[in-house]
Image (tube, rainbow, N blue to C red; front, side, top):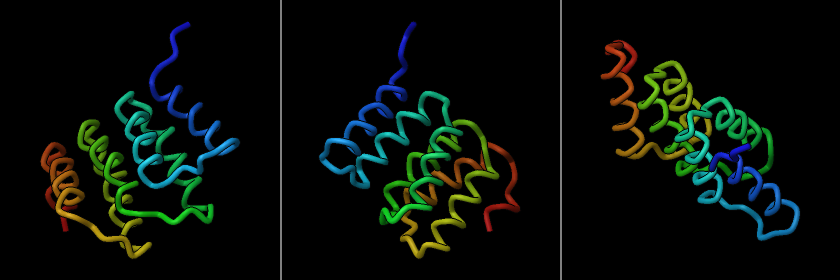
Length: 115
């Protein structure tokens, strides 16, 4: 059977956690991007929840691939919750984050959510 890139990315993450080097925010951003681009948004969100529960220091970089995936899948509810999560964690919301969020809103024609 064929193994998708997101599965390989998660396998590499497991090896890194076990043997090193320790994953950083860019590592997680890349893995979240691999999941999201493969249509595995729920896997990506599960990984984000795992990170939120751990002692790993969340950064803005981790959220960007998820917001971009929301734009591709027109998932305005998840995008809204991601922006809220960033605010709750006092993470810097960049123009890239907002542009991805606005893309979701525009595609979903839910302009009331933008504020």
